[in-house]
Image (cartoon, rainbow, N blue to C red; front, side):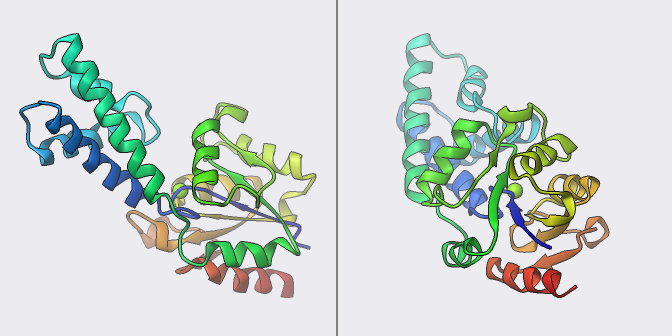
Length: 229
Ligand SMILES: [Mg+2]
């Protein structure tokens, strides 16, 4: 029967895109305040263009952004640090769990092992868990640094099962990304649940999940359904 529930982190447990958008806006404002003659909306779009091409976890976004302008080393460092500080302050104030996550996890934790499989780097994943108050719920927390492969690779999922000492048919995976979370977990033979509330662009054609939820707390119904079978 079901022994473990594995979760994706960003947009599944955390309202990640809200934090990314608002922190990008705060960083753009801080750069302009430090002296760059550019509009906030242009900087904001450029930040997201860098995320689109280099990945949302890219760690040199502000450096790349500011390198496009003719700045002295003094100006560049000033603006970069202003952006990083503004971004970090927003992160601290905005990184919160999705609604009802804490209550639902508390109730699931009495019967199941709870784990995380995320593409985030290890340090960022733990920062997000601590900041959102979710750091005591999970073992294992499999991050990019554990296998150096991103979902939908099978390896992060296999690593989590190994650490849980669980078989694929004893686990459920909950994630918001059809191409990464659902496809990856399915390949390994884990039951899958799509967190539709976290999907950036939901497309029914790409949705091959076994279950889907529109609010986090509905995961309890999915668990009950699996236990009935
Ligand atoms: Mg996600």
